[in-house]
Length: 206
Ligand SMILES: CCCCCCCC(=O)SCCNC(=O)CCNC(=O)[C@H](O)C(C)(C)COP(=O)(O)OP(=O)(O)OC[C@H]1O[C@@H](n2cnc3c(N)ncnc32)[C@H](O)[C@@H]1OP(=O)(O)O
Image 1 (tube, rainbow, N blue to C red):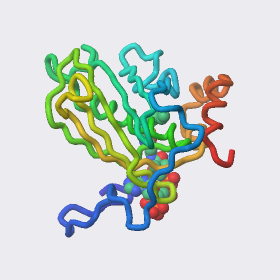
Image 2 (spheres, protein in one colour):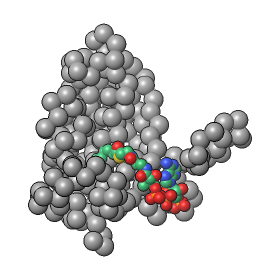
Image 3 (cartoon, protein in one colour):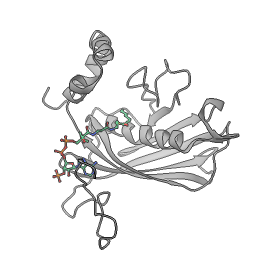
Image 4 (tube, protein in one colour):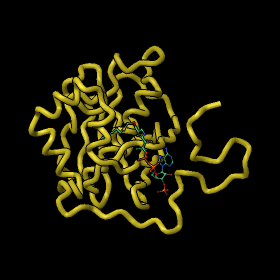
């Protein structure tokens, strides 16, 4: 038996709304007035991030752009290092692309949030060399909980849907990272004034 308390319905229980369905009193998301303009690239939030960091040669190096409202678009090209089966992207890498794109929505809300839940659907195989085009949007907010959804298409915005995800992100403070990250990386990040500035700018009550 796990010691971690479950936040969802146990297997076999009557189907309920589920933890990825916003409660009735959830509210629509509000784009922050200082959010980047539609079309603006967001850049990496951390250079060593496996999803978006430019210092990760085998990472996804996913490029995200602000969209309209509380929406994001993103692209990444599947490299040989991302294979699970010969010539095909690993499902976990595709989940990372979805997670990263969904996480980038936080830039538009101007909050820091981490993934609490990520439910993925793999619709079509994704060959190496594919440019995966991702779109994500926040659908609702309830206190610290941010409900969002994403799709990934093969080749571009009109391509067939290959992957989908629904997710729940939970708002946290910068201390979440400072208290839990390995000290070596935390010290290096704290020594980088740009990193601190980026993180603190997102805190409502620093
Ligand atoms: C630009 C940035 C890009 C980033 C892209 C990548 C994003 C990531 O991959 S982040 C890394 C992966 N995620 C993590 O490491 C998170 C690990 N988990 C944790 O640290 C904690 O469980 C955390 C912070 C999510 C929640 O803990 P805590 O702050 O104590 O929350 P807690 O007070 O228990 O819950 C707050 C609310 O959220 C709900 N909640 C929390 N976790 C979950 C969950 N997993 N599922 C469903 N609901 C949840 C609670 O039920 C509660 O709801 P309510 O307010 O209605 O009662």
